[in-house]
Length: 189
Image 1 (cartoon, helix red, strand yellow):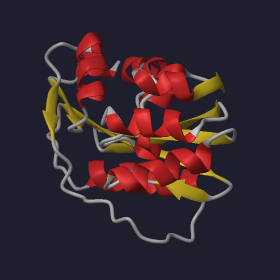
Image 2 (cartoon, rainbow, N blue to C red):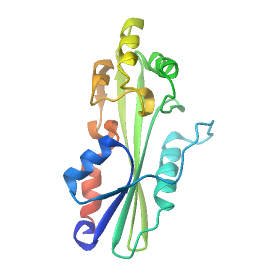
Image 3 (cartoon, rainbow, N blue to C red):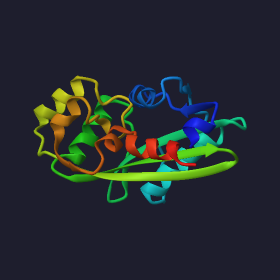
């Protein structure tokens, strides 16, 4: 069991949402920002594989000791191979929310785990369907600035839930941290 065997666990993240959720699992978990920086460019790779690659690069670039575990994450929002990154501006966020309006999309979160000379990568995928949104609803959502630092430009745990008609899968995965999967992984040998 990683939780008992490892003296410490370090999570590679700066996400306030992930930090809050991970502290519920292990209050003394340490956090470090990723060294690897994702680039918003055209990738000709399946979104799930890209998400796994990002998590691997984030975690693989951080050293950890013999009795330490390291865990890194990435979340990607996509529709038919079109990836919706974290918007850099309100204008970009509006385009993203417009593109997702009245449509289904996927949210994939990858988890890279490194401990005792072992490296593992896992992922979970969920489906989200947005309501048909009016221009006023989109503008109102963008004005709240909740889109900042969120893949796909929304957070289902906040006002973004008002954009969603339904979802299928793990809510915590859509938030960016599939909590039950992380707990299972940390309880494994």
